[in-house]
Image (cartoon, rainbow, N blue to C red; front, side, top):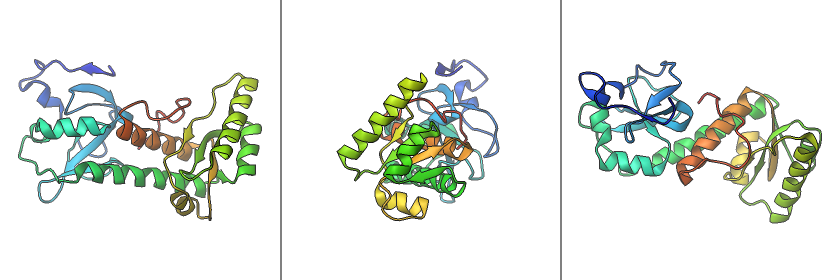
Length: 237
C-alpha cells in the first residue's frame, strides 16, 4: 500500500475520514499524509497534534495525547500542508500555525535523534574514537558510522575506505554514515569529550537512532535520508 493515493470517493466524507488517527498508541504502521493523500510507512511521516491553544504541534516521538494527523517528513510537504490549509481539513477545525513551525519541527527531530543516540551509548552500543571505530569496522561489528560536522576530511576518507574494503571482503554493503551532528552534540549524547568519530553496534537502540536520523535528513533534503544501507528502516520512533 506504500505510496498509494487514497481514492477521495472512499467513505461518506472521502479521504477526510482517514486523516485523523486513533491517538498515540495507534499501532498502524502506515498512515495517510494529510498533504499528499498518499499512504506511507510511519517511518516516512511526522505526526502532528493540536496544542492547548489550537496550534499545530509536532509529535515526532508519537507520544503526545489526542488524535493526530500525519505528514510526509519533508519541509516541502509541511509548507504545502500550510499553504493548502491541510491541517484544518485533517482536524476538521481551525488550526493555528506557528510562524516557526518548520524550524520547531526540525529542532525536535534533531533532539529525537540525539535522545536515541544517548540511549544507544548507555546500552553499550556506541563506541567513539578513531582507533575504536577502525576496530569495529575491521571486526564487522559496526552497523553505522557517525562523523561530526567538524571531522577533518582525511579522517573521514580513511574510515570510509576501511568500511568499503571490509564490505567488499564480506560481500556486504557499507554501513550508513551519519554526518549532521556537531562534536558538541555527540559529546553530550555519549557523555564524553571531543567525539569526532563514532561507530554504532547492532541493537534496537541503534536501529531507532538510524531511523530517526534518516527521517531528519529526509526532512532537510526531501530525499532518501542517508547514504548506505537501510538498517533501522523499520525501527520505532
